[in-house]
Length: 490
Image 1 (tube, rainbow, N blue to C red):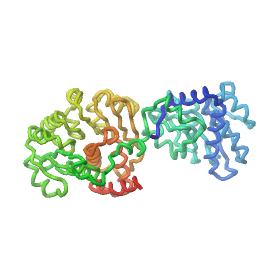
Image 2 (cartoon, rainbow, N blue to C red):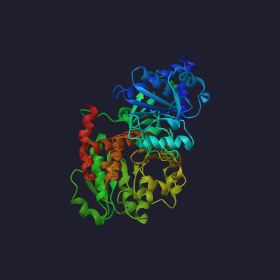
Image 3 (cartoon, rainbow, N blue to C red):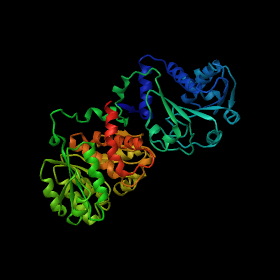
Image 4 (cartoon, rainbow, N blue to C red):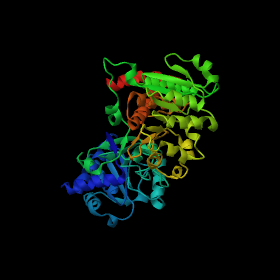
């Protein structure tokens, strides 16, 4: 698993490492050298401006300045505040710098080929103003290559939010592990190319810290993906049900059903209201079709325990139609994936939805975008951090919550979370979310735990988009999954 550490967790990693016998100045020296190595990708002789702040981030900048100067680069260093404000390891690093220290206002940003942003690190928790804000605005206008130390100044390390104004870096060098702010929006667009440097912190500190957030990568969920048996058959891989809307709202459910079959379910049935049977039958091949007469018809269908997962919401219809169907699904023994209309049906009484989820043995996955999330969790929607929003929503609802976007975040009621960074912009197209819901459904039907299934589906969905490229439409995504699975296992 590729853990993401909050600023507090990273501070604890530093503390544990120092307590175990590694001096703090040694960590700073290694960090500064890692920054210098990234800066040194620019040609020898390049003019470099290094903007240092009053904390340890500035100390890393002093170390990088000394190393780069020793390698033959033309280095100018500017400091926010006086040298007397530096404490501890940062003061030691500054004392080892033999060059001139100018004020931040005097630093020549426009005449430099590279600017090193060592003003503020991931622990910043207040809005930037005054001289620092003016410097950041100048850095962003400079046209230079910008290398940020730890996190671009002005980005909050836990939420990725901009605190007033923030550096837009070309590259960022962080240490030991990335922070949520590196991958959550809008922080991610400020980070540029990210380098995670080894500065000598041992992996064993993670056992003490026990972080609950991770970057969404196959390492986080691949061990939970069912292994197909040579002597297996379709009935071993689960039977998913997707609920269709009425005659003019059938396409979204078919997208989800097709994706469920592609992602792993052995069988998929589309449950169709009577008026939509003909139109659905005209478009289905491997997906099976069953007549469903309202909520009672769905309940009867799901009473067959072989049908172990049900997805509903895409194109489901108005509240008076959708809500009884969702209630019937939640009353069944099947795992449930709720999307779109299936979520909005409870916007007036979200607690009614959560009460139906509470205590049911089979899992529920909810897949809201920001608008749907705000309808169900109006108070949480105002929170600045997407990770915090998803976690609190999962704890409140009792469901695995997948909060969609360029930084799709998956959280479960225990606080575990995954943040994705592999979604290309091509996925912003009609029906893409319906396909994602179907991928989750297929993986859950196949036997994957809900949290891991949601994380895997997000990653697979993103990779399918990248494989297809610009011009994709939702109908293409499920058919790209075999290529993605092949790459995953080769």
